[in-house]
Length: 189
Image (cartoon, rainbow, N blue to C red):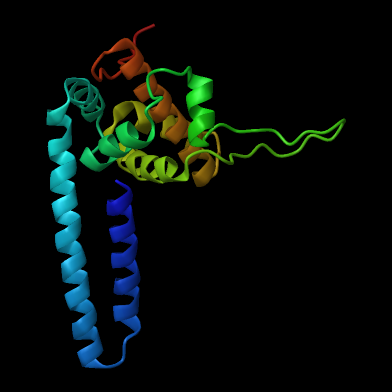
């Protein structure tokens, strides 16, 4: 997953260089490098998709995580590879470990702003992208995000709250060994 992330960053840098290149020959050369990087990324993604089949425990956890709407193979592989504590820690600990738990900045009578910081930034980045997708296709996260927006929360505040909710749900799923089951609330009193 680390190598995949490195290649994606290199590809992004090359795409940016291509936009600013003036000469046609340089743009062509940059495109060749981009094509090579795309092939390398595809090869690594195939290896990542084949990895769960090699270990029964890994395969079971991957199947549980993949059952959640909004989580793709890259997110599942990143969570399993870079967050082995998932399913072991409680919800506060896992949120703090990833860096989506708000910490206060209080001192004496001073009450500072709550903010997230620290944690595993690589996992947080992948979780952010998964949450963007989950806001569209996961009914639980979509309802939660809508409720936060109706309360007037800023987009980033709502996103971090959704990231935390998704992470806590994933942690609970692995802890209890249950597949995704959306919550259905009865509309009747």
